[in-house]
Length: 310
Length: 274
Image (cartoon, rainbow over all chains, first blue to last red; front, side, top):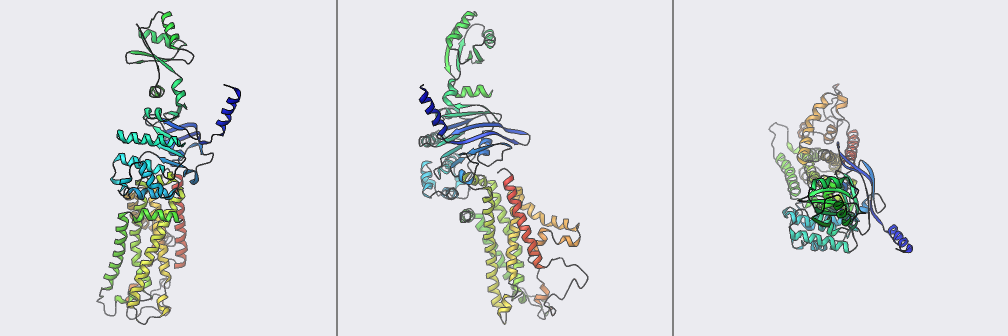
C-alpha cells in the first residue's frame, strides 16, 4: 500500500470517534473477581460482539460501563467523557432481563423511557412498530410472553434514536421468527451507522452481525479484534494417518503446529500463521506418517471460541 | 423537577394498589372521625363535641390522621420496593436518570402525598370545625392552625424514614416488617437511656409532632384548663420531666432527622449496586 494512503488510513482511524474506552476494569463480588483488568476500545460505527461462556463477565462489564454496578478498579469513558446523564441518553441499553413496570401498558412504560430521554412521544409508536408490538400498545407489560417482553426491550432501546445500542443477549427467549426479527433490527440499525455492542452466547449471531469481537473467559479478556482477523489468524487442518497418537505428539513438539486436538475421528492441527497445509503434509511425509486425509478449514468463530475458552 | 414529577405520576397513579390504598386511607380517616363524632360519653359534664370545635380540632384531627401516616409510609415503601423488585430503578439509570434523581423522584412523591394528606385534614377540619363550633371568631378558627403544618412535617418524617428502610432492605415485605418492628424496638432501646435522651429518638420526635390531645380537657364542658390555657396538670410543677420537648424544638430536631434520612438514602443509592 502506498505510503500516502497508509497515512490517510492512519489519520482517518485517529479521527474516528472512540465511543467506549475501558481501561483495566475490575469488578469483584465479595471474593469472586468477576472482571479482571479488562481493557478494550470501541470506535464509532463498529458492531462489537462480546463473547464468553456463562460467568465470563460479559454482563458485569456492561453493567459497570452503564453505571449499574460500581467498578472496584479501572475506569471507562463514553464519548471521551465519564458516564453522565447526558452521555446515558446517547445510549440505548438492554441488560439481562427486560425491566419494566408489569402493571403499566407498553405505551406507558415507553412513555417513561421517552420522558427520561427527553425523546418525543412519536418515538414510542415508531419503536413499537419496529418491534412489531404496535397492536399490543395498550396491553400491560406483565401479560406479555417472554419473547414479546424481549421485543419490548428492543423497542425501548430505540427510543430517543440513540447513537449506541448496548444489547445483552437480545435474542434470549425468542422463537426463530423473533430471533430473525431482532437480528434484522440490529442489522438495520448497524446500516444506519449506529454503534452496536452485542453480548451474546450465540456465536453464529456475532459472526454474522459483528465487525469486531472480544472474547472473555473467567473475567479476563483473552482475545479481541476484527471478526475477520480473528477468523483468519489460524488455519486448522483435519488429518487422518496411521498412529495418530504418535503424530499428535510429534506435531506438538514441532514448530509447525500451535495446537493439536482430536476432533471426532480426525486429528485437528492448528498451524502457526507462517505455515500452510502443504508444509504440514510434507512434514508428516518426511517424518514417516503419510496423511490419508487432509481437510483445510478456517476455524469458525465458534470453534475458535471453544478452543480459547477451554 | 417537572420531569421527575411526571414520571412519579405515571408510576403511582397507574398502579392499581396505590390508587386502592389511597382511597382506603381517605375513607378510613373520614370513617374514624365520623364514628368518633357519634360517640356519646356517658360521664356527666363531658361531650365529644369539644374535640370537633375550634381550636381543639387542630390538635385532634392531625393526631387522628397521624396514625394513618404509618399507612401512607407502608404505601410508599411498597412503591420503592417495587422499583427494586421490577429492577426498574436499574432501568431508569440505564435510560438516563442519575442515582440522585431516583431519590429526588421519591422525595417528590413523598411531598405530593404529604400535600394530599395535609389538604385532606384541612378540608375535614374546616367542614367539621365550621359546623360544630359555636360562636365562631377568626381568632378561635386560626388558633393552633400551625399544628396542621407540623402534621405535614410529620407525614414527611414518617415517609422519609420509610424510604430509608426501603433503601436498606430493598424488599417490600422485609422493609414493611422492619419498619413496623422498629416502633417497639425503639421503645425498648429508649428504656436504656436517661429520660432527657429518650425524648430525642427519631420515632419519639416524629410522633411527638402531633401530641396526644388532652381528651378530658377538650371534652369537658366546664374547662379543665388553667388561666394560662395549658393543661391543669403541669408536670414540671410536679417535679417530673415531660416526655415531650417544646414543639419548636421538636420541629427543628424532626427536620434534622428528615435531612439525615434523605442523606442516608442518597448515600445508599450511590454506594450500592442497583
